[in-house]
Image (cartoon, rainbow, N blue to C red; front, side):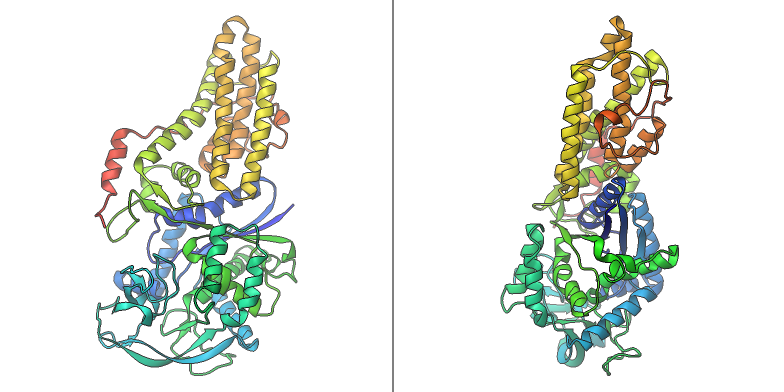
Amino acid sequence: MARHLITSAIPYINGIKHLGNLVGSQLPADLFARYQRARGNEVMFICATDEHGTPAELAAAKAGKPVAEYCAEMHEVQAKIAEGFRLSFDHFGRSSSPQNHRLTQHFAVKLAEAGLIREVSETQMYSKADGRFLPDRYIEGTCPNCGFESARGDQCDNCTKQLDPVDLINPHSTISGSTDLEMRETKHLFLRQSAMKDRLDAWIDSKSDWPVLTTSIAKKWLHDGDGLQDRGITRDLSWGVPAQFEGAPWSGMEGKVFYVWFDAPIEYIAATEEWTEKTGGDWERWWRTDKGADDVTYTQFMGKDNVPFHTLSFPATILGSGEPWKLVDYIKSFNYLNYDGGQFSTSRGRGVFMDQALELLPADYWRWWLLSHAPESADAEFTWENFQVSANKDLADVLGNFVSRITKFTRSKFGEAIPEGGSWGEQEAALIEDLTTRIRAYETHMEEKDIRKAAMELRGIWVAGNEYLQASAPWSVFKTDPDQAAAIARLALNLIPIYAVLSAPFIPDAAKIMLEAMGDEDRGWPGDVKTALEALPAGHAFSTPEVLFRKITDEEREEWQERFAGTRD
């Protein structure tokens, strides 16, 4: 039994995420976790809310709530939505947890002992109107690299370039909007990433199987311009992991916290420790190579904007600590999902957000479309026309239609038990061969995290059953040879639990309904197709499920398209 540690990039606490956020991290991570569990492997699937930094403070201020109270409430909201999308986390933690505070400070001490942290006195943006320093997202302006007008003080979301607030053109405070800013001196801790450059470069070079998107972004940060730069890991904020603490090898950091992008990835480890407190399990066997994690395969899932921190900053923390922590084995990164010719926008009401999606349709509709259109090789685009066509053709016409046709036919001719009689012939042998080839290809795509290819292979597996049913035509055969019609129905009914198990990583609710209808909830993975097609014997009771997937009407599509159009950029 293989062991898989799987983490999804942790979403910011500041509000409900849109479908692009979902398909860029949590959903494909869940797909992979469900698949590995279905194959009998041991899985630890971890996610959390990212609760520190300026996004949390700004959102809490806007909501008129203390930041701790706001974060606690939004964690519950995000956890409930994750459950609605059937995200099967082993633990959904919080970066504000005591475990993450302790671990973050521990790593900082270890890095300092290794000579990888330096104190820097620097000038930083100070807003007279707000009476405070303005770190990161408290400043916005025009990106000097690409001209994007809403670049933040730490990074441009448009071109992903790492920035410092002083780089911005026409900067302003996001608190008051004031442009009356000046540079004042303050002291901060910096992670000496530049000292780790060669080691990180060699490590990235060793990952020849990683997506080009992942390695190209890492290489860009390593080599463009002056190369990998040291990174400030403290900020002048009140909410976060305190940078001055008992045992700290520095002084004068009162009133400062660790930068959110220093402590957020550490939460992957801390969340597993939180899981230990909840379950009594052993978190160290997942994260410490001296405690059993040397046989773990660790896979991370994230959008491309998070790649620099996971390929460079977090590995610099892990490697630089000098301790035997588990390093990531594979980083699956994604491009962006756009919305109907533009970007998702909370402020402009453009696009579908996770809570709204669940109000419209069950999770399986969204899971199937998002995963089968995952932005792996390039940015993808959500349109209502494409969504309607995909749901109606793939889910309703192919899978749903197959289940409905064979269960209703069998019930009408033989009753609600699998019929006996007849034997398999050339058609059945051809189907078994085709399915065997396709299922092995599906397994390969899933192992390689080729999500769109896996989705298309799964659809092909569904289509094969429909084509068999159409070609064998048991409703016609029944008129002259009821026994042979029974043999066809018996095979087709046995396809349903196979489809359920294969489909469960993509559409878990429909899979559960299929297994329950066939009275086969404990069905395992179809290693041998012929054996799997004989698993439910004649006389085994089944039921005819309700419609698995209803079709989306043109009227619904038009209404939703108008409702979520928002205002154009």
